[in-house]
Image (cartoon, rainbow, N blue to C red; front, side, top):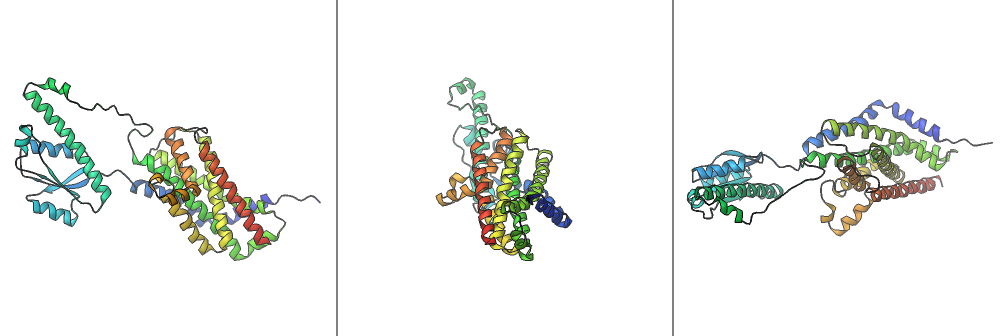
Length: 381
């Protein structure tokens, strides 16, 4: 008697089980949308509207020009004019400002005499990132102001031609792939990879662990169904849900955050499939090892959320990490999918350039599925 494949019935059973719980299904589909919108708007590396306090002892045209030059952009916001150095330091201590500027009384005299005009900066270093960025912004604005003053003085002295002999650096800047340096173009593809990794592992781990707790997994294992049919049958419905999630978050990335999709949709679909297989295979493996929904959920969060956020290159460059963490990052699927997403969205990269990442994801998927088969067979024995 010819045996028929039980793959289709397993897939059908899993779909029926998912449909019978519409609330969980809706939550699974809506969670990545909510997370993308929340993090997409909340997470930004652009530091703007830095509160600044100014104590202008000069009160001259030159000092006011410096203040206008510094506050011309949206990087600084003046939180009132201080009337003493003590007011500036007090505002720093209370956290009302992040940078204090003290302009000395002889500022205008030094500027008009062509001498070095000193300006004191007091920066709140409790947040080193904001403090460093604020210092860089102020220095850039002050350099622009200094050049304008130099030109004005030379023009007044009838020596504007001397500017030709100044060793000024001529910068011809061209930014590729993200011309406006928009944070969203950098953040959103990373969020897609991170959210799908966490949810992919969580969905399958909970599904399989639930089967173990109810005792139905043992019934499936001892049935005529083959191990690979069981694993594929459990993964296929969630891969379909994963593609629905990817479609929705991609549409939001393009329409809401205006992230350009310059690359191939076909390549994006193929690489997304590889990523979902590896992520959901990890979830299956977690549940096969623990056989408990609670423990599987904990392992899913610890084993995917932290590595996906910290070791994928999403926020921090991997090259600056210690050697042990750099080595561990090689087994994080989100690391490779993140490179692929940014390459497809922003650079229009083809399969030839992304081949290394694709091959590694194929390797990870094969290893994970093999481990799932081995662990399930041990459960059968």
